[in-house]
Length: 529
Ligand code: AMP
Ligand code: MG
Image 1 (cartoon, rainbow, N blue to C red):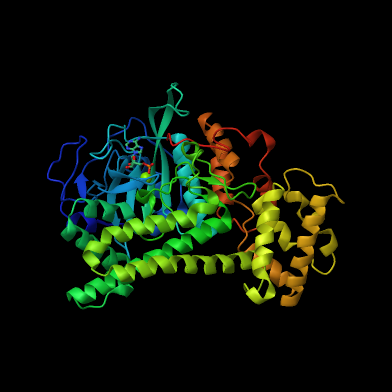
Image 2 (cartoon, protein in one colour):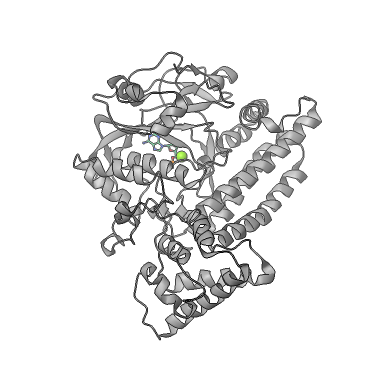
């Protein structure tokens, strides 16, 4: 039987007010608030894997009680719901207090294994942090969050998880295109699960308000629960300050690792505001995210960011570093050692670059990245080539694994034609560029001398065949709006084995169709959710 505890609630001061209305909250990290009941909860889908981690069996997950609990109508024994307080920089500007405006935490599952799991409902009604909004979420954005966070997990990308997606039976009004045409949409609640949902913004708001003791306690809590290996046992001021610096260094590395993974699979978060950055380096808050179809470093799916492109695919590492600067600024007051924080920030760049090079070498099936072998040039010319001719990134790397460097170097174009969005004529200048890269790549692979099958298997373990292509997510949504959830279940199950061939499901491993190129939802998304 799963039991719940409330370490966060027990550890920190609560907001002294208990009524559920918007307000600025001082000297407290959370407000107690109950989910607002919904009229007719039905569970659309749940994750077996996450349920097992939480200790829920299939009978419970299929029961009406499960739908009631994970829509917010009822709490299990030990759940003490609350909304947490945080702040953040949005699109580079300090936004002050934000907080869980449409998230309500239920509590933590106590587990035998070290580390707890926090369960939270997204879309469960207003909280003191809702800033006038309704605290609800629509079905389309909930499907996107459920499917994508699960897909990311099975791709090996650090992420928050999703336990369930429950239809509320109530409608929610949204102006999806911000064009003055609000419409009623079905409402839904996703239950998200993670070891911790603590964000950069939690620390930032404490610092901005001068609440240094609370900031220290939040640091200690985070380190005790999620970074146990950093603890020294000594409580002297100097050793605490040292642990905080080590912690920040680790947050820098975890964040860099996450961005390397995003780059590997072609994921663009879309809203990398500091309130959407987890200190555990987990991908968090799935909003107007997107997946790169044709490889394009400048692409962003978020219509709100279409001018500045602050959060574009190729800029995510730079933004992560900027966000880490903001976190460093916030904890500087309590670590007393800005030199070490600065050093960690500097190291971020070199660490990220090295990790990215290693990752790209593994995508190419090389034993390791080697400057002396000309790998820098090989990667740079690949970057140009993939963007000159619109090339589907996912299909390209899978095709590359089938490339035989002994036989087909001169006609490399044939190998990758399946990934091109517009045909390239054999004999053209474009084909010469592509084949020339193929020749360089073949030479490099032959020098490595890895047996073809071995190279192929290794490549297919880092280059997915199935990703949550934007247009597929939109197809699932369109069908769900018509009451058909079959594709939701099928795609969810396909995405649980993204590296496997799954020949029966090749329809989910195709290039973006032409109709989806400019269709809202399939190529661009607003923040309305
Ligand atoms: P996001 O851009 O989704 O990360 O959201 C930024 C802030 O707005 C967070 O504090 C959210 O909790 C809040 N928020 C977003 N949508 C809603 C909503 N429908 N109701 C209440 N708060 C919301
Ligand atoms: Mg957010």
